[in-house]
Image (tube, rainbow, N blue to C red):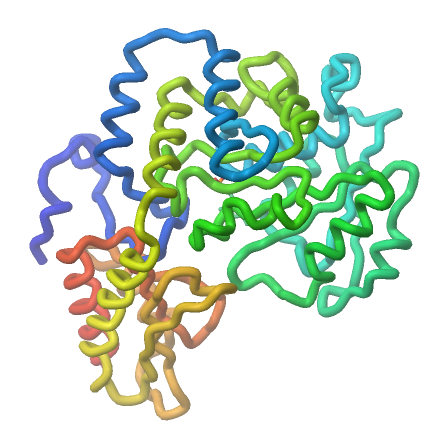
Amino acid sequence: MTWSGESPDFYRSIGVNSIISASGSTTAYGGSKLRPEVMDAMNRASNAMVNMDELNRAAGRVLADITGAEAGFVCSGAAGGLVLQAAAVVAGSDPAKMARLPNTDGMKNEIIIHKSHRFPYDQCYLSVGAKFVEIGDGRRCQPWQLEAAFTDNTAAVAYLFSPFVSRRAIPFPQVCEIAHARGVPVIVDAASFIPPRSNLRRFTAEGADMVVYSGGKAVRGPQGTGILAGRADLIEAAFANGSPHQFFGRGMKVAKEEIIGLVSALQIFVEEDEDAENERYRQMCQQAVDALIEVPGIEVSVEHDEYNFLIPHAVARLSREWNGRSRDEIWNSLAEGDPAIYMHNIGDPDALVLDPFNLNDEELGIVIQRLNEELLKQ
Ligand SMILES: *Cc1c(COP(=O)(O)O)cnc(C)c1O
């Protein structure tokens, strides 16, 4: 199959084939395509030298302005932001404590978290030496369970907003109210919970003390960047613990051109017409649905909602009438094909999901054609 992504490029020169990601902004498949304007800004930034504290503070002001938070900081991906959130609530900006991490003796080091919010990235919170106090049984949680979890060692309450995460948690504003009544900050991971762009301001408005968003996912900033926004004193503490300062966060460096790239990408992102963008994605997905509708034994639809499919996705579900290969076999055939195609994985054993976020028209056409072939293959 010919595809212009296959043209000779630097990846090829070192023996790597580029792939087609119908998986959204999944980090493992390359994250996001960057906008030319952002690459241009990074290119120019890379050739001028700056004082990094000055740059970090200036970039932080832009992030604060866009998120409606008191302050902001460009961190090394949302995951790096989780580490800095934890460092900030455990050690603050006290250099004697900061220098001791991950030894947290004598510091408040408990982070309260819903059992239903435990997720693969939460090790980032623990890395600074914090430990979790879990609440609820994973399926439900009552306000009294949160109230009973506070101790003299509580450093923060963590809260997760993410697609396909259980919504059986105490409502976020209520968590903030309960925590704040005890003077405890609430730290939020909303890494991939944008768009809608309004979510950039929503959690801060609802009471979050710090929120982290990925810079390399929907925003299309450099893959290694994240957006940390929140209360001035806590962001100051995250900044103190972070690179280039020689404390716990020094291993999570963000380069000057990455900071400029993130700021530039975020400024463009918030100016974009979200309705028009969604309409374009919806049409792309409808094209896939129209092409697959005749395949016997599957149900295809465009799905878009405020919890799981944050932009329109094309979803093909193998129904009870399906008697072809398993969803995993089809998924693997696509991933092992030429070009390799990665579909979105939502944890549903019967769903093949197309996320249009990283597809151009040519790539969409190839994905649709390959899906059709694989679904019709016996
Ligand atoms: C993607 C993701 C992260 C990590 O974000 P990076 O910017 O890739 O570091 C953290 N938490 C959640 C919920 C995510 O979806």
